Length: 409
Image 1 (cartoon, rainbow, N blue to C red):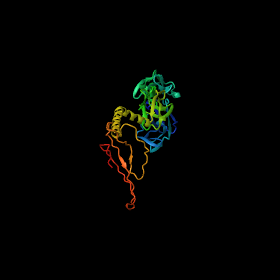
Image 2: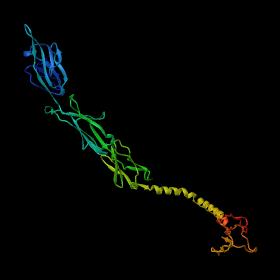
Image 3: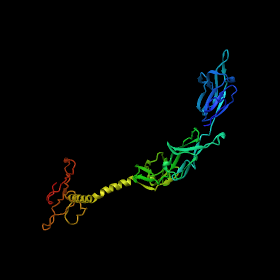
Image 4: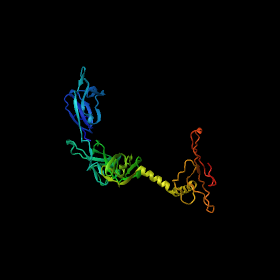
């Protein structure tokens, strides 16, 4: 430690002594020096009841004018100092004021600054050099400085003359907050640099795109899930359909990203892919194909698939029912040609018979068909009696009987 002595040998040589007197000049003090205030009367007159002030604010009272030790000087020690006291003469006591003395505290060296070369952001495996930079005062240029490097409470290099710390191949564990300290050799002044964040970026791996489901119909929801196994966050994801971007998503702390949407038309079918990237790399996934079916076609196909196992049984049942109905309702008739449709007309006066689907009785030796009886309809002769009024035609509906030779009317 450099000790300063301005006057009077009886003052201990333990620091920079500032004499407060009307003739005092501004004092140049370096940070780290021990600052001492001493009040001196004119012509070395003895002072008592001394008061010290800084920037017109009271600091200390000394009954016998003892030196005032202010400790290690810092930049905050600069200011205007003065003192007051009582001077004893032969016959009386008089007041005394030293006047203001300006004290300027100079920096021994500038505060250090920590830098990273080539950059504080780098890829995993890249080299980086941390450098602690500062500058000595021109009056202190002969002094040597010692440097220390620290990371999050751990000391990486302690009090070395070398102002650099080299990391040959940065790992993800090397990322964090760093700072350095500088101090003079043999001195008590220490200055610390601001923190520097070193970021080590791991490239992203190729993302994996998962599509749930891969086949659907219009109106269904589909989810795209994109994920990387490695990569330093934040990670920017983007989803694409046939090369056109659909949506972006940022994962500030890493992890997967998803995109959920509803299929509105068949235009949503195609090849989907996702892209993942960070500050140092960017990768694209393998494409995944999404197919969109027509809901009506899909419904018809579904119904057909449901009916296929029952189709043979259904056809067989329909055949049996059709055969039963045909056997029940089919009209049976005797073999042979049908009678002519146009029959000869009979005289009005004679009652005649109208045959419909009937033939005259056949000889007995012929085979009889008794399954159906044909009806015989008779038209009565119109009455000539005027008293009986208008003639009316009567119609009788007959049902088949057991014997076709009888016609019931």
